[in-house]
Amino acid sequence: MSEFDLIRRFFTRATPGAVLGVGDDAALLQVSPGNVLAVSTDMLVCGTHFFPDADPFLLGHKTLAVNLSDLAAMGAVPRWATLAIAIPSEEEAWLERFSAGFFALAQQHGVDLVGGDTTRGPLNLCVTIFGEVPAQQALRRDGAKAGDDIWVSGELGDAALALAHLLGRIKLGEAELAACAARLHQPHPRVALGLALRGIASSAIDVSDGLLADLGHILERSNVGAEIEFDALPVSPWLRGRFQQKLALCGGDDYELCFTAPAARRAEVKRIAAQLGLPLTRIGEIVAGRGCIVHDTHGHPIDIEVEGYDHFR
Ligand code: ADP
Ligand code: MG
Image (cartoon, rainbow, N blue to C red):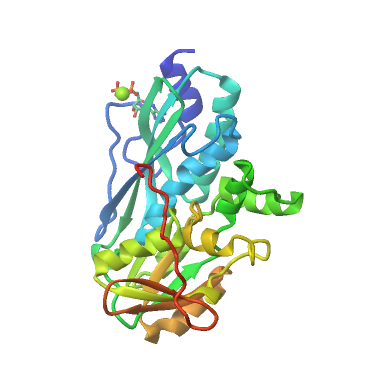
């Protein structure tokens, strides 16, 4: 199979949302009036982000999902993506499943794959995603104000719990593993939440490197501090008690949104949670100053070493 046959067969689909899609030297894209482009890139490297024997369908899903999550955190509507892929050999069955997983999620979100690059090499998957948002409504990291509530969607720590099992550090029961593994392998990017939070959230970020690390980026960019109630953190029944502190605060791969909003918008946030059928939990408050304090049940500060995932540490 030639490179061009491969691209045609596995990575070329209709692109109704593009002026011109795959097959020319560049794609042509038209942003809707009143919007600006929101662009983000995320790369998944074999051995670093996934195991060499990872299920290709789920890998296709996750490759796009982690990128959609970044647009969700900006409050942007996802529109287009490009895919740069290095593969060791043209294994057709693998490519079939990978592209099926990728396009299944792309279709759910109305995203057109409009281009990319295909080369031979160690397995490496890199998506650039393009979305649109009115510039003034983008959910940025620098808008948190003292007195704002801090919220988080869904539940934290399950993906990290599954990873700990797969790395042989802990042993989960079969049912627990199934539930957690889905969170690790098939994250659901919170795109609808990001859109609903336009005009309500004062800042937002997606939780990919652990809550404290990612909230830390909001605090730094907004020049504020935070106080978190440990008991308020949303965790699944199987995480409760066990490794809860480390995984809920510092585990990675959650792909939930952490956002801040004025206390006056609390009722609206709760209405959004009901509309989306997605739990939104108030976990603390933005305060003047710097840094993040986590309080235990008795109101005492918990001593935590913040270690979000950092490839270079
Ligand atoms: P060029 O040599 O001009 O960079 P390529 O030969 O790399 O073009 O790619 C041919 C066409 O196929 C381009 O439109 C490119 O965007 C698209 N393409 C290449 N790889 C992929 C891929 N993995 N997924 C989607 N489109 C791809
Ligand atoms: Mg090229």
